[in-house]
Structures are given as structure tokens and as C-alpha cells.
Image (cartoon, rainbow, N blue to C red; front, side, top):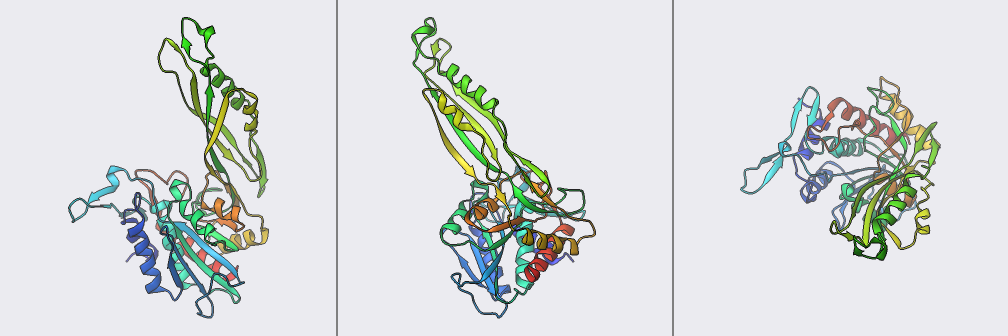
Length: 374
């Protein structure tokens, strides 16, 4: 018989949630109401939230008590065709879920319904320390910029501490699930240069917007990347020009050219993109700005690390992560966050996405240990 965390993961992965998270949220909400004594809510955008305390009383979020949250998301990126099959009802479909060689395969298994399942079970089974609340949250819209997390924060969801179940397995070495104490953010920018159009036979009669954009691209290329030291490691940012578009015809000097910049940010630092302001007739807009994360509470990070080591045969470490997650939004709002989850590098968003059942069990045990000792 499959482990409970494997069974719950299979149930969650089977529910499509790349264009509408409602059905997956329904499963999570129903399970929490049936399996726990927590106060369970579903907010206006579809986030599923639950809260409990040791004495069994239903806590009010406004209570002045310390809180620890297990945080995940139940939306996924669009599946590959091989990850979908037709459902019994005409016009409907479901995700393909398979279990083999100790792993569960399917869209969202690694990112991150497996971690959500492990957190749900740990939340149910753990007893919160006296004087504190234990919280569970599964957000919508993480894959499209943290829609659910931002809404929850705006509505007052700011736990004191959070363990976000994004991937941290095999970061320091094979066979361990590490504790991430910082990650990079992402800022996406569109830069537009303006010129004056003219016939290409008389280029001096116009102002070539592509030349102006090329000067801006060179400025971006020469930028120094910021870096910070976290947990004994250097977490470095980056800046790259990723797309360019300009011109209307081979014989026309263009009056407009635009290009996009992908900037990976680090806590407290930004690349000096303001140098672009020195170029005339240039404007830039921020299309997306996902914040980085850094845990500033060393005692909390160490407590999570000790809980992880207690259930490991290996030796997990404090590490950093290159990808932005909902932990960035929570950290920006004032929550001390770490990341601890089953997904391995290269597993998320792939056509053969999968997660190890043994690591799911490890995460479940670790989450419960954290909940009862933090």
C-alpha cells in the first residue's frame, strides 16, 4: 500500500489546475475540514488557509500570538500533451498520474503538489507549541507572479515564520533535502527607444531608434552584477537582454525600437539600470518584479536545519536558491522564511515531472518536527 503522503499527492496531482485552480482548492479545503480541527477559510481569489492551536480552540488571526505557516501553491504550469488524458465526461480531461520506481509522475508532482500534501499531513498531525498558532496556506497564481500570495498579504496574512515547500532537495549534495535561507528575485523590464523615421536613402534626415537602443544594450551589457553573502555562500544577481524588436521595413529608418531585460535580483541590491536615464528619448517600464528572499533569523534557520538533520541519513546544509518563489512576497511583508521541499533541480515544469516518495515522507516528517519544536 502506498504511503499516505503518496496517496494524497496522487489525488492532488490528478486534478487539473493550470488554467483554473478551483477544483484543486476544493480537494484541499474538503480534506482540511474533514481531517483536522482547524479553522479553514477560502479567500476571494481561491487561496486555502487553515489555522490551529494546541488547545484546540479556533484562533483569530488578529490574536497576538506567534505563528508558523507551511506555505505552498496548487496552481501549475500548462501540462505537456503526454500529461493529459480525456476524462469520462465529454470535453473534459484529467492529468495523467503514474507511480513507478519509487516516484510519482505527473504535472505538479514536484512543483508543488507533493510538498502541499506533505504539509497538509504534517499540519494535521502536529501539535503546535503552547502560545503559538500553526498555519497552513496553499496559494493560487504562484506561477503567474504570486497572485494568491499578494492577495493574502493584502488581506493581513503575515505569519511570523514560514516554511515554503518549494524545491530544496539535492542542492548541496545528492540524497539530502537542504534548507534554503535566501533566493534571487526577478525583475522584467521593457526598454523603448524613440527616434525620427526617414527614408533609408537619407538616414541623416531621421534619428535611428535602433542605434539608440543599441547604445542602451551596450550599457546593460557592461553593468556589474550585485552579490551578497548568505549562509557562507555568494548569491549573485545577473542582467541579460533577452528580446529585441524594431523597424518596419528594409528601406525605413525606424522611429521605435524596444528590447527586454531579465534581471535576477539579490536581497538589498539592484543592478544600476538607472544608467539608461542618461540616454535621450529612452523610456523603460517594469513588467514584473518578483522580490528576493533572505532569512534574517539565524535561530529559526538553525531550528529548521536541526529538524531536517534529525530525519536525515545525510547531512543537509543551509543553502541559497536561484529561483523566485512566494517566499519573496512573504519576506518582503515581514515574515521570516526558509524553503524546504522535495523538488529537485530540473524536475519542475518538465514533460516527465516527478517527485520521490521517500523524499515526500522525509518532508512530511521534517515539517511535523519543525511544527512541534520551533
